[in-house]
Image (cartoon, rainbow, N blue to C red; front, side, top):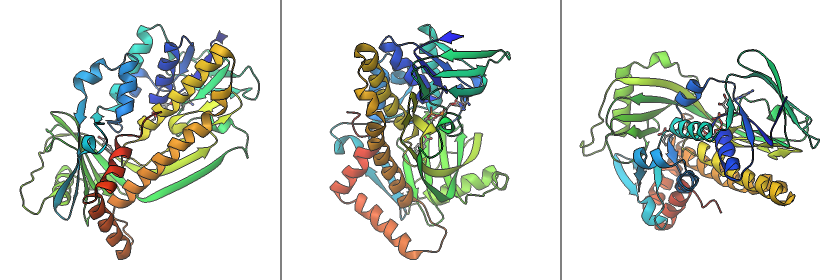
Length: 394
Ligand code: APR
Ligand code: PHB
């Protein structure tokens, strides 16, 4: 039997950052992760960090490699009708920027920091089960990678186990309300050994569908194409991917050239908006993808998870310092305010930039009008920019 203060399920950005922030307050935790360390350190996800996410990582001592290798972006491009329009993120937001740094790099840095500080992360566990969350002494049971049955007794459980986790399901039926929106398209994403073709991210709206140009380093690009939801990856040869990307991203002056290179990884991911409320039941607190999902347009998933666990860590710090549950009691409401703002922004970006495949010409005109407005009105551009760089954590 293991005794700790906070039992954390899931070593994604939410669980790891929570464990890291708690350690800063002298609060002990144990992280249980179903996958192997190598797996979570390689999992390819979005790569945009909001301004306050970067600051929090830096202030808490895990920003060293991020400062060296992260690519600070002061703007982004919206491209449609064969023309690019720059949104100057920093000028529109009083100097705030975003940093391109793969989420698995954040995960690697957090794992290294936890282990260096003597923290416990149990990888490759199975059969995690959540017990007694409606009492003051919740428990976690699980099997180690070697197959031994274990039990953790703690004060609080944090369910940071992502969209397929077990924690949310431990809450009795009827307590939670779920809100969901599924989009009629998906993203085909590739990671390519090719230098970025532009210094900034390019979000393209084209009659053949959305395309996104992103990057990971001066020699690696990350590119995405909107495809139908049931699309077969096998139908996309390398040539077809490159040709579709250049068609959608081409400019009317014919000047823009997409640098090509060997494709290192490829995959198709659906787009989904989901929120489950509230984010707490008894001594179980849910954070990150375990309780909300955003579509990838805008790359908010990691940032929202970090914002959640920051609120939770502060609540727990107050609880252990003074016995007060005031911040913990407002955890769900505090987080949900940001969650719904980010949900709206991600839905709005998604709706503005994707073809609907439903022949709705009225909707298509609305999208073009919205793009025209965002790229010609300062007020509209500020709205995009301040949400994109992330509203302040406080
Ligand atoms: N037992 C233990 N671990 C589990 C279990 C389980 N039953 N189920 C899932 N997990 C682990 C997963 O293997 C994963 O490593 O929980 C972790 C959840 O991590 P993420 O899916 O990354 O979710 P979260 O930490 O909330 O991430 C927030 O960051 O990863 C990005 O964009 C992604 O939106 C996501 C965001
Ligand atoms: C990425 O680099 O993977 C990325 C960037 C921006 C997005 C989504 C994904 O909106």
